[in-house]
Length: 119
Length: 115
Image (tube, rainbow over the protein chains, first blue to last red):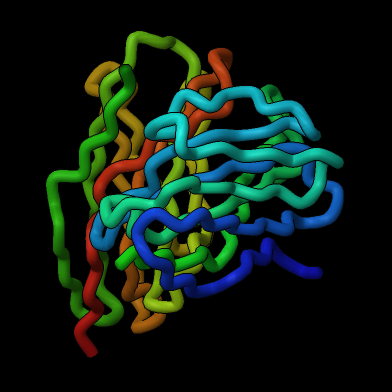
């Protein structure tokens, strides 16, 4: 596709349930990022991948959160035993190349996000 | 840890006028990137402009330009000839040059354009 896509766009779940959020980056993009964004706030970094390797997961709030990108393309962010405080917009972004790269290669393209509501 | 501060939660500008959005950041690194992103009501994040810290020349992109003051750790965005479509939330962001791809975002400035 032309841009980063995320699914589902909206997810309502009950406390204690597991959820899986999917991100489909722009084809050929090496780097993939996950962010959490509260209403009226800037994106908060969660984790990122280069190809299939998870390079940094320091932003994951706790061990209920995990992410994978097994084939270096689509990524899944999983939240186990959801809690009400997990409610937020979860955003995915991709970029063509990591690290020392040109402006075009390093620019992040954001997806529309998944709005998660935990009841 | 790096922090990015946007001290103006809301700004407004008359259509066709110029507005400047402020951003300051804190870092101990010497090389890094700074960005301005725009988030319209559709909630997509759109890259507006990027500045490399090692470049002295301020970045420009059509009606958008930055005033990068490295010593002061300041990175303001100037929007000239403001248009109705510029109305959005604007986020300043920082990324270190060497120490990974983690981005740090400010809390955002909501820009209203008055017709």
